Image (cartoon, rainbow, N blue to C red):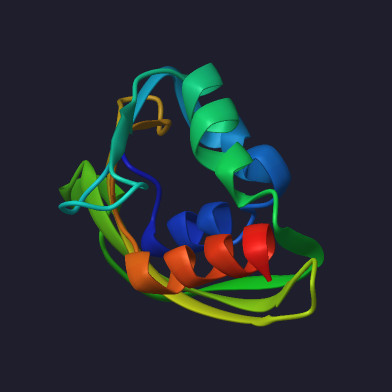
Length: 138
């Protein structure tokens, strides 16, 4: 059974460096698929370790001490659905002081233990590309 919408919001608000405490709620065999076309972030990560290292490590340019992640809305979850849509905002700064104001959605599946087994991540790829470019070349 999936956690309640309130519990799901609290889980996703724990995202931090290398995934932060959020990773405590991911199944060892979690699958994270970054959705989209023709951008460098599109990828599939098929384990807890891959999600932590491959997905979250690409955000090395983030000043995590400044980041505040908030769940705007959770649809689903609880006893009626193993799936939940989690709409999130991330506000803070990059390590070079550039403002971050990112909006994204994770479509998430939970197992019978309430752990995350699958995530389809819909990210603002243009926003992330701008930050990657600024961090590497700016």
